[in-house]
Amino acid sequence: MSDNANRVDEFVRLLAQNQRRLFVYVHTLVNNHADAEEVLQNTNLVLWREFGTFELGTNFAAWACRVALNQVLAWRKKRQRDRLQFSDDFLTAIANETQEAGDALEEQTQALATCLSKLPADQRELIRLRYSEEGSIEAVAGRVKRTVEATYRALSRVRHTLHECVTRTLARENRA
Image (cartoon, rainbow, N blue to C red; front, top):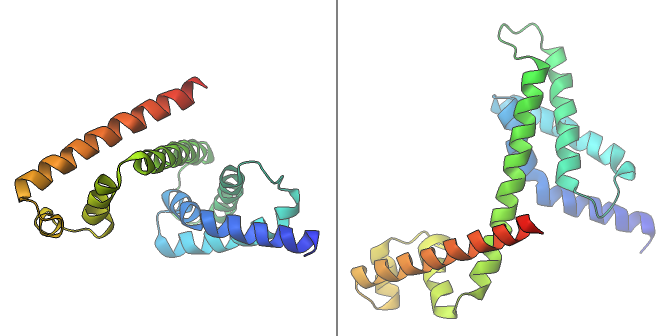
């Protein structure tokens, strides 16, 4: 496969991996769903055109969010006729806060995945039944052949273990 084809594949992978996050980011800045979709489409076009300037191995999400912010600002200039307009400085501050919150959420999600993988199989199954299948406590208790009270206590212990593990993991990462 050619180097260009590899870059195209990498772009498609990174864009697909970050598309939901980009939409949420844009939607926080453009409060209308349809307008957010329009801005996201423009952002995707710019990302595609400018991907050659992206340095592989760096933070794609941060780069894409900067491009999205510029597209939001451009979209706002076109729509200046609207009555209520926030200043670009205010919008930039919100964008920065949203980016930081997204980064923190990504770190927490990765820490949780790591901690989940460290759980014994029966505890992972309990979490999967409760949250992946969105089962009620009663349904989970039936599946694992325990009482509702015992299932609730077991889930409580596992959540506590996960909380401690995630907290330790994030603290270690922040010290590093």
